[in-house]
Length: 182
Image 1 (cartoon, rainbow, N blue to C red):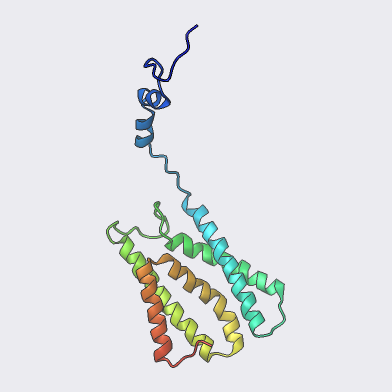
Image 2 (cartoon, rainbow, N blue to C red; image 1 turned 30 degrees about the horizontal axis):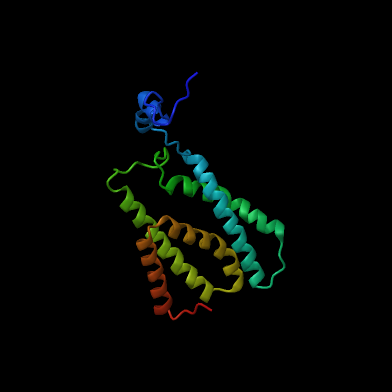
């Protein structure tokens, strides 16, 4: 009976065995990136934004010292879910194109995505500032949750420079409109 020493050349390491079986090349060549489909991703985003809608609805109701009616808050969140799902399904970028929207050439997709959400963010942010400063409390209570979700989602979809530019535009609107933020 012989024992192998660490210096013995007849024993092979795991790396040598893997190289012999070409395991590393098979791993490099295979496309094993499994992405979640468009619909499950849209559902996940929609659940998160619906929870944000519910939270904002609850906070606005509490801010105006109204009695919290959970059934109406849950009903509004339930109504917001399918709308949010449809918007995210249509407009959230995904490797697999949507069958419901026309496909844009790959060269202009990132820029058109940024321009679309930059515009949405500026409009939603400016209108959010306007209604919270000019409208009566009941109108604010009804409009802030969906508008706030749209604004936050638009900013999330943007790259950092576009998002910063959008927030700067909202601050300029706040200043030029002589609005206050408290």
